[in-house]
Length: 413
Image (cartoon, rainbow, N blue to C red; front, side, top):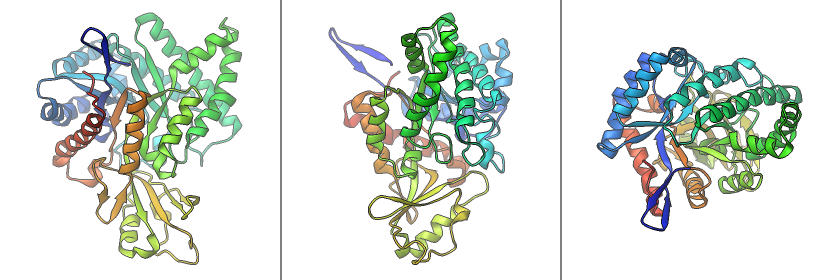
């Protein structure tokens, strides 16, 4: 974690901030240069003037293929340095085109049960090691296992663990060879292997550690060293929207990970949409259901007045045109995995989970549980015209900076 000296005896913890470039269209390296010039650099200048800014770079298979070439990588690194962008994090969750007409279940492919996911993540880690500044820990966020409706159960989780281990070994080798520490950050999300903090903890204890103990014992690692390596390189990407959608208590979830000894490598700061008392809000319900669109999945979840989850669905088109009181009599609130700007408490007639997002951010800051905070409203192109993107992302940054300021914390860099 980054520490900056302040005077003779004090040290101040300063988290690194960025927004995720998965909001931008484009899979080639030329596309990356284009959107950095059109959006990321203008956002940096608006917020920080000539100062440097953190960068979470989305790297998929397309741009990774080009950056495997040393000359391309060196030129790209120079471009980032020249423009004051410091890449401390990579978003390698979507490996394929994240802005195609229909993404839906394609975003989960290849899963971690497929060795191809591990190979590409390892390739991206090697590229990242050349981009990451010396002395700075980096994070790579990735899919949490597999897409549950397609593959789930013990056999799948054993394959997932095996492929994670190969990538974790590669990260340990990179650290040893270059001194660049890069952490894998698995992302809990509705309908994936890891939906909750408890799912990640169970996977670590029941699958990942036992397999690592067996595999690494043959390589001469002790039980203590095995656990140390796992807990160093296997971390969680905590997406606040995902936890809110399933009505998971943000503070309790973060604390359960901490008690289990699992690090939060990165926080994706995001809001979900919500609708309280949907039976009494016909127009708002129509708007909620009307946010269905053909590109991404927007899982939904409902709870009753006691906080019990009573209803779940894979996408908004699974909602009935009209709610029937006799079918869902106890429905007190609906939420959906639809990211909306983090500074908004309301989206049109709908509410957002901004207050829960804020609680999570404050918990992380107060406890110093994580030093990588990344805004991830990848749905901006669905919500606003493209020319509004710089303004919208700038407002999100200002909300996050204000939240830091409440605790007297300054950003890193």
